[in-house]
Amino acid sequence: MTPPAVDWIDHPAAVALAGRHRVRAWEVIPWLLALGFYFAFPKYLGFGTELLITILFALSLDLVLGYAGIVTLGQAAFFGAGAYTVGMLAKRGIWNEPITGLILAAAVAAAIGLGSGLVLLRTGGLTLLMLTLCTMALLEEAANLAHDYTGGFDGLDSLPIAPLLGRFEFNPLYPTTQYLYVLAVLFVCFVFVRTLVYSPFGQSLTGIRENTLRMHAVGAPVRWRLVLAYALSAAIAGVAGGIWAQANAYVNLGTLGLDRAATVLIILVLGGYGRLYGAFVGAVAYMALAHFLSKIYPTAWQLGLGLLLVVIALFARNGILGLTEAAARWRRAPRAIS
Amino acid sequence: MTAPLLETRALCRSFGALTAARDIDFTLEAGARHALIGPNGAGKTTFVNLLTGVIPPSSGAILMKGRDITRMDQARRVKLGIARTFQINRLFRRLSVLENVYIAVAERVGAAPSMLRPAGARRDVVDEAMHVLETLKLTTDAGRRISELPYGRQRLVELAIALGLKPEILLLDEPAAGVPSAESHIILDAIDGLPRDIGILIIDHDMDLVFRFAQRITVLVSGAVFATGTPPEIGADPNVRAVYLGRAGHG
Image (cartoon, rainbow over all chains, first blue to last red; front, top):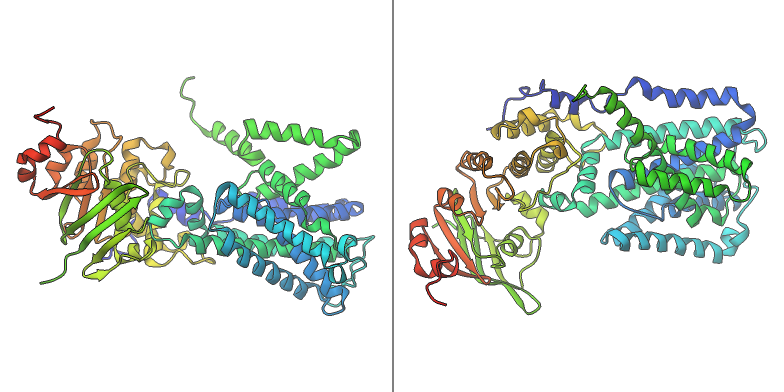
C-alpha cells in the first residue's frame, strides 16, 4: 500500500518544501557586515560586542516566541542564570575557561528552563505570561539574597576569565577578542537555531503556534515539544548571558531583570518575530536608535522609541522584516488593474 | 466473534448539573458508515470529544477492538488509529496546504521529533503528504497558504490532515458545515471516495448528506441515544420525526 518513493517530488510545492532550508545568497550579508564592522570601527567594538550578544539573546527568544508561540516575559531569567553560572564559577576560582564555561552556562539555564517549563507550560496566555515573569522575579530575588555567592546587589566584578583557547586575553579596553569570540558563538548558535526551525521538530513547533488544538488531534505530544523548545531556548539565552559575563568580566542583578526581558521582547517585535533575522534587524535598529536618540535628547530618549513601537504595533505587526516582505510581495504581484 | 472496532458502554459525562452524555451504548463496526444526528445541544460534539480523549468521561467505558481506552490520552488514541475533523476549521493557517498535511504524516511516522535534518529531507513524508492531497484532488493548491484558499477547499484540507494519520476510525464533525451548497458536492464526493476499510462516524445536521452516506444512524437527544437503525427505519420512526425532524404532531 505504500506509495512509490519518488513520484511527487517534482511538484512545485514539494520542491519548495524540500528546498526551503537552503541558504539564500543574501544570508551572507549580516555576517559580512559583522566582520566588516570589526575592521571599520575598531573603536566601537565594545558596542559591537554588546550588539552581537543582544542578537544572540533575541534569537533565543525568537525560538520560543516566534516559532513555538510561547509568550514569555521572563527570558532574562535564563540570561541571568548563564551569566551568574560563569560569574560565580570564575569568582570562586572553580572554573574560568571560557568555552567550557559557556557550555556550563547553557546546561544550568537549560535545567532551569526544563524545570520551570514543566510547570509553566501547563498554562497558556496571560497566566503563562505572569508565571514567566514570576520565575524571573524569584531568581532575581534569590540572587539578591544569596549575597555570599552572588555579590547581592553589587554583583561580582573583575571576574578572572582565562584567555580564550589559552592564548587570547579578554581586554576590557580593547575588546577585539570578545568581539570575534561572540561573533563565532553567535554563528554557531544561529546555525543550530536555523537547522532546528527548518526541521520536522521546528515544523511541529509552528504547528503548535498556529493551532494547538489541531496538534493534539494529530497525536503530537504538545507539552513535551513545548518544554523541549523552552529548554533549548533557555540554553541559548544562557550562552548569551554567560558570554556577556565573560566579555564584561562582571555580573549584576541587571542580567536577571525585567528591563532586559522587556528590551529583548521589544527588539524582536521591532525586527519581526518568527523570522530568524528579525533578531538581527531588531537589535541593530533598537541599539542604533537608542544610541542616537539618547544623544539628541538625553533625558527622554525612550519617548521616541515608544512612539516608534506604537507605529510598529499599529501598522507593521510583523516588524521591520515584515514590512520588507510586504514590499517585495507588492513589487512581485501582478497588478490587477493597470 | 470479534470485538467491534469502537464501542462505548454506559458512557456518561456531566458538566455540573448538565448531563451532556447519558448512558451511551454505541458500536462502530469496521468499515462502517455511521451517522450521528440530533438537535442542537444533544451532545454530539461532547460524544466526539469523549471518543478522542479531549475530555474524560464521568463514568462508563470506551473500547477499541475490545481494548479499554477510556483513560488513554488523546495522542495515544491517535496512534491507535482514531482521527477526527473539526466542525470549525482547525488548520495551520499561515502554512501551506502541503505543510499542513506534512505535520500530520510526520507525527504518524515518527519523523516529527527529528531536529537536525531539514523537514524537506524526509522525502517519504513529503511524498505521502502529496499522495493524500492527490486522493482529495488538492495537489493544485499544495503550495498555497491555507489563508488564501476558499472555505470549501479548506474543508478538504481538514479532511486531508485526518487522512494523513491513516486512521482506522474517522470521526467527521459536520464536514460540510459552512460550505456553500454549490460546492458541498465536492466534500460529499471526497467522503464517498474514502477507503472502504476505514470505519467512519459522521456527525451532521444535513439530512441529505446523512441519508446519502450512512448505512446506520444513531439519534442523540439530550445526551442519550434516542434511536438507532438503518436510514429507512430512522426516517419512518414517528418518534424521531417528532423530536428531530420537526414534524411534531402535538402542541
